Image (cartoon, rainbow, N blue to C red; front, side, top):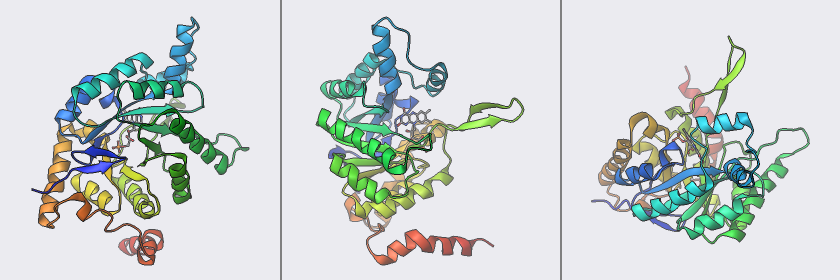
Length: 326
Ligand SMILES: Cc1cc2nc3c(=O)[nH]c(=O)nc-3n(C[C@H](O)[C@H](O)[C@H](O)COP(=O)(O)O)c2cc1C
């Protein structure tokens, strides 16, 4: 029987299938179910900076600082959590399971969240994933300023806690290898590629905004794979794939491209927690067929480690893709 145990950001995982931060991991019962369903680790729902700020304001007798529209959006996504409830979620999840529990903090400014990072460490989380999504919404901020903000958050987190730190970012960076190197220097241990942001749609009859699809589709996975292939040999950060991972073959591709683990979210909403076992057994079967005994036997076999692969990931894909188009 092949051994599918692995290491991710310094943690020992029984297998490389991680349940993503989402409504599925917002309650202890959900985390326990994910562990019972065979997850290798769980990323808890993010504690949003807005939640923390709201809690702080409320405890001072002031009204919530969350903008009503932001509040509606956060609660739609199952995102509003009480900061103290969050600490209980971390503590109970660690006590009631025997897999790594990765807390998640959504950080926007330099306020509020560092205190919570410390408290999360104290109640026993095994690691923290920083859910970072700074973007420029004006014409004065350039890309380097946005990236500096991101790196500064990691520096701050590293100063605050000793826990392994993963950084979860969105897909819109043009110089990802450089950013990854900066994040590593800032003290990160892993990169989660990529967050899939809440999407907004427009109702053309009502002429108003409405929510877009909150769940991904399989077709979103190839661009994640492409970036993992490009950067895995250029960074010392461990890498977890997120977005569009649906089946065992996706996880196998992630590892071949040099990634270390894959996070599942939409597939679990669509098909239930049994998808975890399906991905794991598909991995075992494939390893058996190819006579691989451990994950490291095939890890990075197809990462970008020479000019040929560089050509493949950067240009040849266009040629091949075009050839496939009749
Ligand atoms: C309902 C829902 C809630 C989510 N909440 C969070 C969150 O709190 N923090 C976070 O980092 N990602 C959150 N995500 C994003 C997922 O963790 C994941 O990155 C994204 O859905 C892409 O993966 P997928 O294609 O497997 O769904 C959420 C996703 C969904 C569908």
